Amino acid sequence: MISDSGSEVIVVGGGVIGMSTALELARRGRPVRVWSRDLAERTTSAVAGGLWWPYRIDPTAKVGAWSLTSLRRYEEWAARPEETGVRLVDGVHGDSRIDGLGAWAGEVAGLRDTPEGLAARLPLIDMPAHLAWLRDRLAEAGVAVEPRTVASFDEAFEAAPTVVNCTGLASRELVPDDSVRPVRGQLVIAENPGIDTWFTAADPASAATTYFLPQPGRLLLGGTAQEDAWSLEPDPATAEEIVKRCAAVRPELADVRILEHRVGLRPSRPAVRIEREERGAGRTLVHNYGHGGAGVTVAWGCAEEAAELAAAG
Image (cartoon, one colour):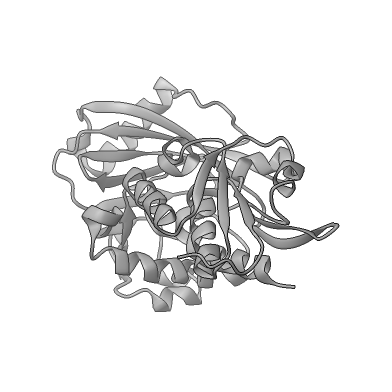
């Protein structure tokens, strides 16, 4: 239950970053509301593949700790997969080796080099199910999620003295911060022919990635990492290439039945911004955005840091 101590906080943004931050604030006894332009199932978070792994994200000095904080929670929630949407699943990063990772890798149980790549048993999160579970956790904590589109943070300051910005790509205009850029990701959703392990391979120099992720009732095939691409329309030629790349790893995917196509725009930035900004007259704006394609991976570490900044001073 939320206590009456402390002034109200408005969290702007209802994806996984916004919901995790709101839950952390509620845990600290702050009255919280979430304003979200979209329902959780229509946010970028809902399109995410859901594999825990620090992927194309900075600052490296903080990413490890943020990621491990999230990992510990996912490991706990994986004991209740039907409820939380979180499972621990075996797989291989085909382009990685342990010696290329940071010190955080020593805290991840079971990582091992194999001829196929870096083998691991990692959290794989069914994002639509997990987002619905988080929304239920917010309701239990007394946190309202209100449909609301803001043109300025001043609108939120009219309702509360502390505002947390978790708007992802929309921060480009709202802050404004022109270092925030979209990285377009396209997925193919297919019937699963019996694959129960995940695979990834991502060349940092290429906009094409290769991965397949077994989620309940479906298999996610990817993908792309197209910088500064804003289109949300699936491209048929890109989808065909995705299937071909995945079939080169698992030939049974060559004739897989396609269920649907999805596109999401990752909110990329040279480094994640978690920062407290005083906006005058007792107004505090805390930023928590720029997580790119690793929002699920760092969500809870970032949420804890943002919540601490919101409570400071």
